[in-house]
Image (cartoon, rainbow, N blue to C red; front, side, top):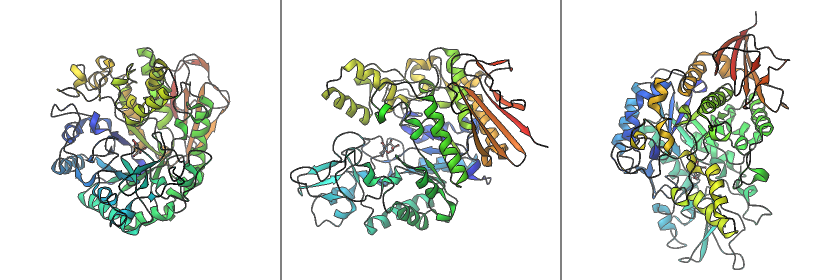
Length: 547
Ligand code: GLC
């Protein structure tokens, strides 16, 4: 493979279950990914991140791992994975695996053994506590709803589960457990993977087990030994290898992320944070309907951009993943075809001008939209189903819950990839595990590739620019007009090069800003020409050189 600095790379995220089914099972598989390698080559991405394909009961679609060393037969086998690696490498595409080590499935052998007795060799691989006066050990709340402790009658104790009841948190205080985890990661590095994405890695160090005035997050988020553990993980596994790493950081801070990514500290290359995706959670509440707060979106994105740039950290930059609704439906406009295409491109330009490693989630590059499910039986996601039950218990009307899920559910991004206008969007010849939205007839890869003005080609161009322009990789970031209600504006500067990015987030004409020049060469825009005013959703990236 050609050497490419990971800082200049673009990552494409695949949700294998919904990507491409080659067996007719209704679920995607690894061979389905192999089949599409030319598509990725055409798009130009450098890494493919696969969400977990390990053995799993799939209660949380693979984030509940029951065997770290086996491939889930529903996705294929290790031979398929090996073939994917070889064929991808031959095309200069790298493979990034998802590493889930905050918790395992309760079906993992460690947990099965751990729960049998307090003397089990694996008892301390997990976090077991006595009840506090007949109540769970603390009042912490699970991220998927309910108390974070699950009672187990076999030994009359509770185990911690920050996510589903079938996802038991590992005890990172235990050195044997840590050693087993490092061994497993080294197995996959030796297998040939090129990148590692660490699931909720900033939750591994639990502090004190005390009740909270809130949800309990303060006790385990960026916990007391988290940097020590990540540094140890680095030294024992990928540290001296050509393996790109990214950590998923839940409710984190800039200060911690500067540490996680400081090259001197030997922790991780880069981090995901989610603060910019909570701008439609009024008062921190996800399960409500709300317009997004544009000024807050800019403020958060830019605060992170500038601070990580100045402090020598490194962000992953993204709008979409398998846990987030579709961005055109969320921050753009999917109400008409024209607006979908304009705003889809605008959002791409606004994001891909930023500093960090860009991530594209399957279907984003063709402007896939939220499916608009109306019935609870159309949903599959455990978090959404739990939320439905909890909101019903609180007395909320089911129509209202349906409106909320249609805008917030993780299933919005988990519907099958829309390949063409044949039945089920060309995803499967069987019955898809989750419905394909009817929009596939219009929004699909086949159409996008035929139309030179489609969103796909804007992404292709942005990836090409990322590879070619040093200023996109290394340039410092300067925001402008942060109080403007319509425009998102920033510049990037490196040596004598300067990029200016202007994006109109509104469905109306807006004047050009007065205090910033857009006279440079237009590298990319979502309109054919430039006019006196910025048109609805108009976005441009201009390039200039100082003499
Ligand atoms: C991460 C994953 C999400 C999963 C959770 C628990 O947030 O992205 O899909 O449910 O971790 O593993």
